[in-house]
Length: 398
Image (cartoon, rainbow, N blue to C red; front, side):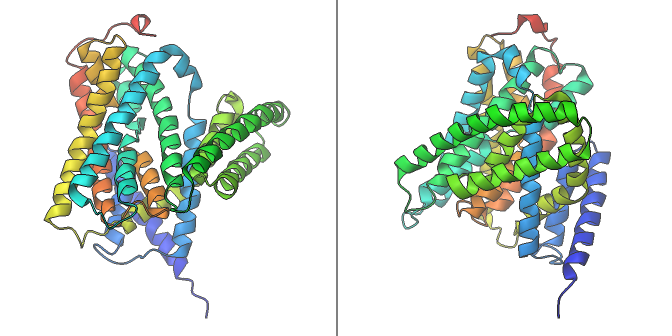
């Protein structure tokens, strides 16, 4: 007899993530924190009411693809022109330092000479820490009236480049997860992928521009855009061996400068993702998080990873800012603004788990990093930025 339990599971997930999301919002935290907690409560660690199923896996995969598509659509490429080299240097050092810190942290706690993937797992821990989610930072800066200031523009520009660098590193390391893979072929595939993306961008950017003029604000535009996202996600995974979220992200980047289309598509997709796919994705991360096996070593590792997560962004991005002419206070503000990992770290962790580079014992530590960095970033940013007046934007480094 066919089971309809999945309908009840959907209802439970949607209601619980919404309820705890609203509670999170009431205490001025993003709803993603509540959604994560809902998954942990529903999962095997607490109530054991919901377990991971093939349906949840596939639905959450759709959710993560759409989140990355939205991330690409929300990318403002014009911000990069305002800070230029400074944003690139800040992002580059802000990726390298967490990558090294996370790798060393994993090796100190879990080094295993019998595991062929040991170093790749350690490296992937660093990849998770390279992620930056500046949505909380953006909202905090907006409330403070400093989003368009020197520090705000530097953070936005660096965040865009940070995402692109993170996607590239994720792609490279994931490619080495298969022991039969030839390293040269990994880089060859990546090179061919970017050539493919360049050709697709050239053709479909103009095609969508034309469609935006003919079919402005028609539902068919949103449908075509989502189809475009899924096709690129499929081709990335199927023909290049590159994570589907990479294709989805670049699909968003290709369309992000078609302003009317972007605003319309984002509005339509946000509604669908917010109501269904996104809650299931975030809850599924919580459901994956097994706290029963938490021992002293895992707790200590979680704390160490959290400290490295915070300090590596503050130091890495801060050093990059200082190297580009920002003063000490501005550099500290930029570093703090890049601390929050948010949903980006969860997305990266899930892709790592899919290729066997993130073990189950890692999820509690990653969830802790996401929740704590999300909670402390707006608080630290307000404290740091309110301690000194910011210089005008026209003094920004280039």
